[in-house]
Image 1: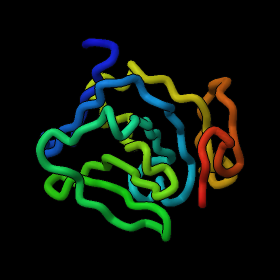
Image 2: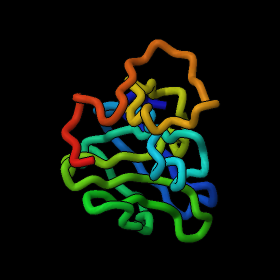
Image 3: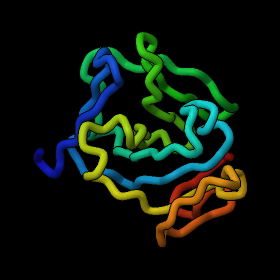
Length: 140
């Protein structure tokens, strides 16, 4: 895979995407909304500049999960695919697990750790933030 091409999609293949530039960042989120959306103890998002990103055919169905954000999923298979925050309108956030090669992107930090599931621990040396990090603006 070319290091500047990132592709991914949902479980059933109905929704595919491609980014032609390196990610802006990758974060592991421990908030309750990400847990509910994914069914997992945490959820990782890769941020791509909107100018380098395209949905190949269909786009995810969006659900407004808060006043400032929508979450995308495949209406056919239910795969968790994306996050769209008004304040981060210059980018698309896709789930790390939806990438064809998720090992090609390394998370930079953990956010919303004050909401983390108490028994779930990731043993890494990444920075941790009780709420949002200072790496991007947030209305959360």
